[in-house]
Length: 93
Image 1 (tube, rainbow, N blue to C red):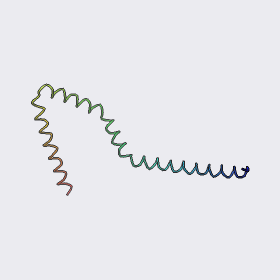
Image 2: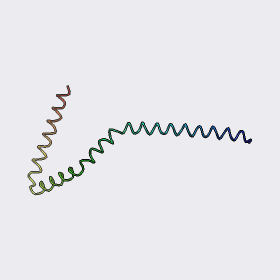
Image 3: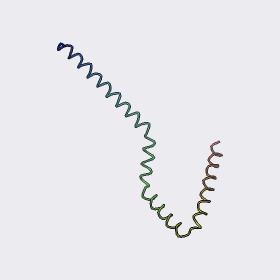
Image 4: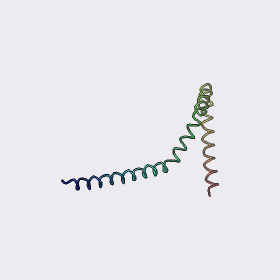
């Protein structure tokens, strides 16, 4: 091949690489925008990780001392959850 042909091929190849890099940068930006709510939620969870672990450990310790309270607490939590869902559904209408 001639030097001119090689230079032309090299220039086209470099232009294609530049275009692919731009497309990749755009895809990364779109991906970050799409996953931003998930990242925000994860950061919120990570922020309260210490108190959540402390509270759950304390709850497990308290409940393990009295076995009867576990059943009552579970039943109450199911009732509260069901009432919350129904109230949310009624308010949403």
